[in-house]
Length: 421
Image 1 (tube, helix red, strand yellow):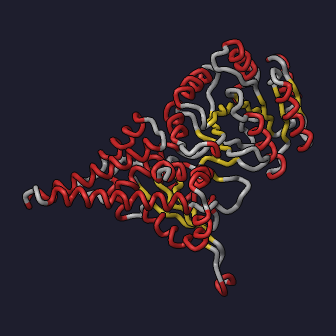
Image 2 (tube, rainbow, N blue to C red):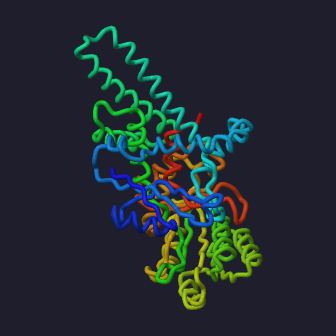
Image 3 (tube, rainbow, N blue to C red):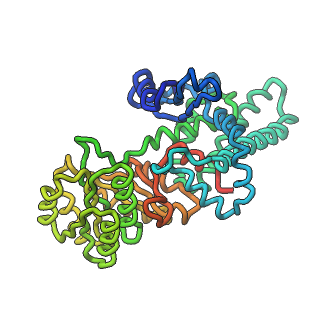
């Protein structure tokens, strides 16, 4: 793992520096803005500092000599403690769980990042728990071991205790045992026997972030797909998600948006999208088959982006699945993109079957909804690892155009390691 800081006038320039030096696979781990204060405003300009990382399969002990994530978290916690204290004291236990899930997303409509105090505190508590457990195990063994062997036993005990507690935290957050063991094994191979607690924790954190990658969201640049299909089971929130994205593109980014719906099985779905189209002042077309979808390709040629709602239903409904596949194929491959919308409240076993069925229709990116209705987010990691499909958006409510944002791998990692308590 190589971790370096890059500083430039803008975030884009800093990221370009990171990509040039570390390569295209570099992942941005942290972004920090510097604003000159007082008289310095007259002589200095604002700047942005990013921390970037790339996995080169080297020992995670190198983090002891560089900017380790956990150390950065502890520094940030001290700076943000005053601002977050009142909110943390007033939060109730159940609400705290749900609010923590909201913190794994970056809302595109907000310039400043949401405070991460609650998750940071849980991450810090995990480290303290690790240290406490290690000390207790070392005390138990101290009287029984010869002095010549004591150091090696203590170091091995430390490593085992760290890994076991981290594993338990991931299982508590409903990460599949297979993927939890995979993470632990990959990190353990690169750890020295005397690895410190925060080095172990940082190693797992970094590995989760790198595996999740950066979100792949809708882009409106020239050459990007302009016909965006939303597929998924009934009741996961496809229509509301489309309305949120359409609002953001139309009102905030000033894009020419058009809407299409093929969900003619539910009259309410058509009327719901028609209402949103009327509010936004964008065109809406109802299509019933692949031929009508082909006709829309030329009809909306002047639009910047076309968002397409499809019919939900059981993933075992072969006829419905075939209809959706034909609609998607009606648009040239280079001009289309598909998003599979899933609810975080769906059981993991069902999610496995759903993703397998829809993979027979098309490649897709992943959108997760209803984060406000669950306290565990392990399925986001599970399904990403199972399908290898890029993550994109997450939603947590019915408010349009709010309650949607890009999935942030860093915050998912903190939530998975921070636990639910």
